[in-house]
Image (cartoon, rainbow, N blue to C red; front, side):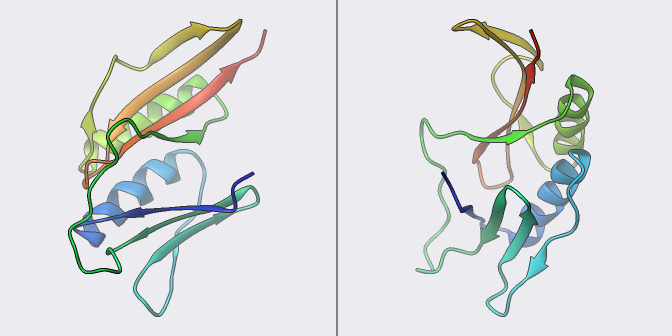
Length: 127
């Protein structure tokens, strides 16, 4: 459904450090920087980008918004969470663990990135 997601950053290098670490923990490689200075993490399933806001105003996070990254295992979720905390992220919500609802089990962890965006890593636990 989605081709890409772009998040604004107030400190692009701090955000790059955070996403290099967290996305690296999920097995994704280094981003590509375009001529405008934006960073793009490209995968087979889509593109994630970070940028200074084009309008020159400060980046702000969306209240009630969450961006989720797919993880291959609970261990990958834990590695993502630890990498984020070690690289400028802040903990939010409950500790990493199982959440149940609508007949599914999810192993999930939440963080706020250096710009305050709420992000998570999620593994769907097989039945």
